[in-house]
Image 1 (tube, rainbow, N blue to C red):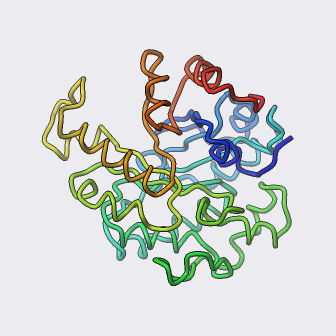
Image 2 (cartoon, rainbow, N blue to C red):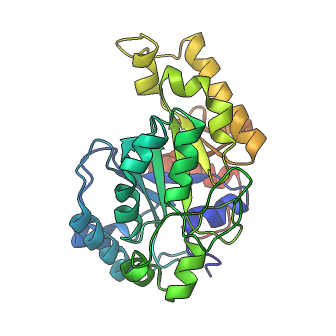
Length: 292
């Protein structure tokens, strides 16, 4: 039934909202938990390594558990897995110095990465380049230099994806830059510096989704404790991210509740963390046909 390796991308291609689950810290990364999560209601699983443990052995075992517990009811080998990077998106030098994180995490067979504290277009460009193999040429000379991921990183990941080495090397490339790509690269705009560069950062080829991070942005703007309702400055920041996503043809990630979910979908939200109840309501609203 599945047309792609990455369930989330397959849905986004259909303009269907994607719903994720998973903690931003303390995610349980064991083989047993992977087998259990293989039947999740969610379209992708968020693994928080920005503040949670940087656990490559756990992540490798978790991905193997997802495979052995699968396939999903939609026919995908596993649910998609997107990992929040520990490194922040300050500038090119910071990303280059910490590119080993991207290679290690992608090498475990995950389906995407989220760059938190994205603050400059140079950082974002470098992030994309470090996640690509040099053989994939789309975008080179049009905002990107060639990829820097090395041979050998595919050895374990191709088994998780259930494909040949050649297929993995060509498909582990960012969508929608590469229409056949199977990885989602996202940005979290969550401080004043990042907001000021929103349009430039989101125009970098290879970005697949973006969000405004309200928790850190509220602190960066001097709001503490975090307001229960977004002040005008944060509303404006959210609008900048949403509008830049629309302008660049990438998915806008935003929170949704049972009360405002339909409104969020109508305004352009295409990725959201959601409980099973909220995800079910959203799927019914957009008349999704893919099995859960």
